[in-house]
Length: 405
Ligand SMILES: Nc1nc2c(ncn2[C@@H]2O[C@H](COP(=O)(O)OP(=O)(O)OP(=O)(O)O)[C@@H](O)[C@H]2O)c(=O)[nH]1
Image 1: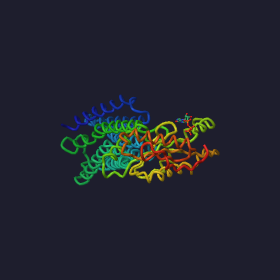
Image 2: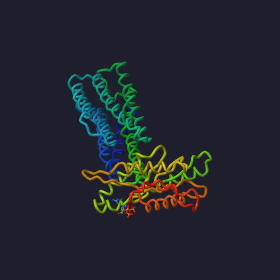
Image 3: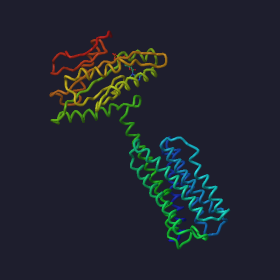
């Protein structure tokens, strides 16, 4: 296949991919649309550059070659901008600088000095800088986003960057004939270049769409498992994790015990009534944060609903239960909730149950903790009540501090 045909086919594929992205635009969540728009514009710039390269066979005015190079350089800039937008990085002017400088240089080297080698080197440097910047953005997100599609994209940019460096080295070594043409059919490099350059607008667009769909899937998973107000795991996650830990603790001989605490804010209705529902929401977030900071290791705080939280404990034996409950109670009691000038001391009542041989289901543990919570509320609030060790035994291990209700 000759380079003109390859450039032509590549252009059609780029346009098709850009078109698919355009069709899907409104199906993407709003925050992803700016990145998708930038990616589409970049792909169209690539397509524009590619068709101008193909048109070199028709001997168009010399500036079209410089223009083709400029379009591709700004295409790379568009991909960098799209990736930065995708990861929420600020738009910055420097992103435009390599392509802008490269464009001035390429026009000069094409129309002024007709220095083909200089042009190839300039374009290679600009492409490499932009691709390295893209790779840095992708790699820097590793900790935040372990998505496979992000790694595929990073691999793609790396492969193209390595090819561009190889291509620059190749021309430096063999030297460039002043009569060089991008469509010179004899040079295999001229056939490889459009094929490799087309991978970004073509395969890259698919990888970009996969990145979008993977993020959407993760956001749905997070939304389904997290409480929207406090950011803690929600009731669904609580039940899932609770069932899992309950079964592990019952069936594993190595288990160090299992327990859970139901934590209920005292007189929370007053906060809503006196300071408004919105302030109540902020107070809920405050308590969630306090519980979260009081949890250790694999302890899992969750919002069960309303002003009630549940903490799942790992390796909890009955004799350690009062201290574990106290730790949670004090974490809330010792840090009053403040909002502007408002200082509101908050307390919680806690019912705690530790796995017993006759707990046949996770629900029975929850029910016993709830009964203990009822006792904690009824006997003064701001206290911890431990569910009895044996069925029907009256509660005696409460560690309440006995503040008046
Ligand atoms: N702001 C806000 N309030 C909520 C939310 N969910 C439940 N509530 C409120 O929490 C309050 C719970 O009141 P009650 O069940 O009477 O309990 P309480 O006032 O905390 O009293 P005790 O539990 O007996 O100490 C109600 O006023 C609910 O409207 C929420 O997401 N945000």
